[in-house]
Image (cartoon, rainbow, N blue to C red; front, side, top):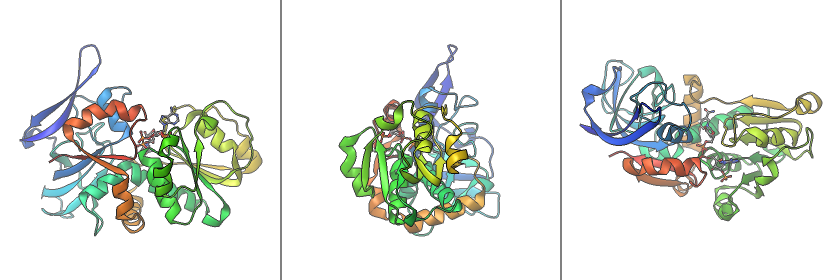
Length: 327
Ligand code: NDP
């Protein structure tokens, strides 16, 4: 038996979340059985647990879009008992039972070996948010962005994606401006590597289609008016990597930044990113993100606490990353 967060749907349609005990033979069929050591609470997990958005595609569901742990048994020759692995996405915690549990049964194709020198807790301190931040950095680089081109804006700065994006970019030599609704966290953002802090209110409402050219590039975790204003204030030839919707799913923008300034909007998806890109992202995270930065940005909680923290995360009251120690 092992502990798990368990989601069911009431007749009213509301999601009900509880901590319960499950048996290994209740898990869905899978090639690899992983003893989960750590998982995390991501924005999407909080949506699933609270039922605020239709993230969960079938009930009952064990939430948790990522996990790190050790292979217990495998019918696939690529993995053997004792191997340390990490998983992000592929519908885990949405269509297939996920990582907020003591065990997970999954497909071999979806697993990435834990990079050498990285612990399971560190991997989940990075988690899907940090891995997505690295995919965003890689998207900027793939579109020709370099540190000497000018300042890079990161929105949703205190969140999981934003905080790790700041740390990664600053270590690569970029001058990073952090956009946040929590100016009281300015010292934390500076310690992560931000050189300037701006109030997110300046980006939050309707704005002109073309604005002062401020940013060589940007990583946006917020969407909606914020992304529209970021595009409008990106320099000629600049690149914006868009990965999130913390403000909203809409994009009330014009084509002016694209057709008059040659701005590129690069979409970033972590869930179905191809394996080669995942391996590259995790190797780079292991090499480029110092352990003290990871630790400073992390709070470790238990499975039960994760339930109570889901609404807090959606309300934007969580700083950095929430790691769930499932042991
Ligand atoms: P968090 O909740 O940790 O962070 C989101 C941050 O956005 C908050 O901390 C806050 O930062 C800011 N924010 C919250 N509400 C608003 C608002 N109404 N207007 C403007 N800013 C707001 O989430 P994550 O960092 O884990 O994820 C960020 C987004 O990226 C989410 O939408 C998530 O779904 C998405 N995502 C997408 C992935 C992909 O594959 N494309 C993968 C992972 C995440 P502050 O207080 O500093 O302003």
